[in-house]
Length: 187
Image (cartoon, rainbow, N blue to C red):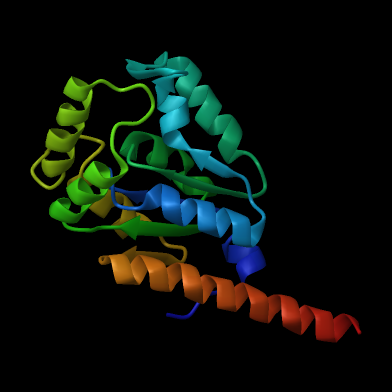
């Protein structure tokens, strides 16, 4: 896995995938490494403190557009419609495509979050299980595959937990190498 020059390509990274795929985990690590703000599309999609209640669509879209206008960010989420809105500002795209069983196991491991109820949690597990079978839906394998295929800048498909961990580790090594090279040049 070879990375392009991190300061350029990694200016605005979008990470997409199914619920429970590890998008947040990866975004946090990359955000720390690059010193970029991490943007969680969940935080824009849902009403604050009201899991399961959609935010007003116009407000949500404006928040996403404003976040995408920044010079640097690591953005993550399952929302294909929102990913599509920022794709033209994205400099590198990562698609975490793990089997649904792994995503469900990950969600069960982290448990109920964000004020969701047991019923909502069960609904989330069902929704994650249907990732590949949903059609004509922005938040599906079908949409993520289409967005990934049309993206012409650097992109990385990650299809195992090991690939996700390896990606984070190799990125860290790549960034450290570039920083080291620049330090030697400036001496």
